[in-house]
Image (cartoon, rainbow, N blue to C red; front, side):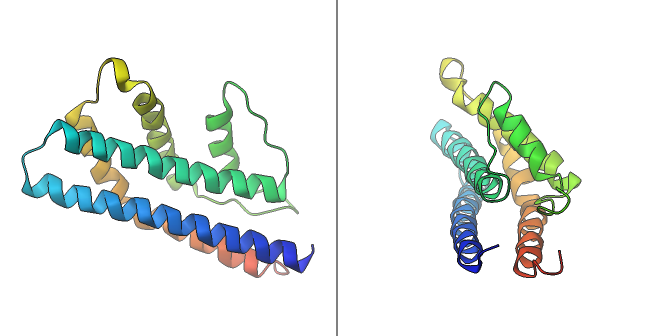
Length: 161
């Protein structure tokens, strides 16, 4: 593999991780607000928006990984589910898995919310469900970020892979 392509991939990977960190930061701010203020429709919608954006950030990272290693991303009816499934799969001789099974289960829940959020314009969001999901997102933050860091370390030591 050309060293410059790998360095470019790693730079793009790091940039996307920073985007994900920003979304987590804004969710942490919203979580603080939810503890100190009465829960308003605007706060619930803001939390929903940032959970949605966080998952979109994850998907952008997944597309980056697929595009670099496999160069085979097909959009179809099950694209989002299939993309997530592919991230938990190691491809022998190509790349390690990006995420663990535990992270996969957590991310699949957020993927489902992303779909709900995109279609909630006709019925709104369930306040309790959004706040529950916010707590889960923040609780599992280190798990997913650790998977990403481990993956990046493996890639940087690609000769060992």
